[in-house]
Image 1 (cartoon, one colour):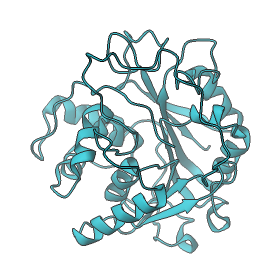
Image 2 (cartoon, rainbow, N blue to C red):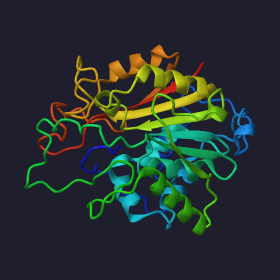
Image 3 (cartoon, helix red, strand yellow):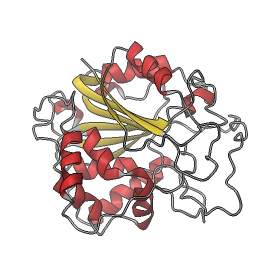
Length: 321
């Protein structure tokens, strides 16, 4: 699955390892937000994954260093402009040594960031659902085309280049390529392990009972609606797989009040309160909300807002008590 086109946000790319004081303070506050799991050691393999990671959340300086490293791809740097990865990493709060699952990882933009942040003592699993050639595509987006005079936004969710010049590789292949590039560049990153599993059963048996520290789902929860996924079953599986204190972080495109997930295949949005209620029904507790991708001027009545502007997006961090 791939996230839908979104215009670039007005964010100046980082040019050095040092952040302005204001942003540094913001990132430090995000990284130490409520609900972060207590630290314990974790080895890369599943057998040692029962303990949580020992280190403190990433500092603002470390996040800046991750984002400014020269081996990151041009496509990922382009996506940085709209994804605000400095704020996102600080909000998520990955720690060295964690065992993490990036659900619906697609091209692996977030997967790679987590691998860089968690480091070689942890492990990152990148999930994708099996391809179903008989599945019908979602309905055409309601008013979702960008005017011809508007500049083309960057495409494609987890790290797709701004211009689609070739078909996207399957998610496992894209993740394997990212892992190869990280190894060739000598980056001290966590291993990236592709997983191909149904959404309702996203975690293999060796990780399914209290083995994960972190699960992320970036801008694709809404897709589960038109795909007909049993979301209650999926959320329950994630709850079981997380350790006590483990984090489940979801970002998505905001829908209007009362729409639930009914516009998932047209406007590619989901109502924030509806999503929260579904996740909390699995036993999770909301620990923090991130407002750094919000746009109150988005009327939320189209896939791509007109006049062209960023979509209103929310980020929620849930904790397994």
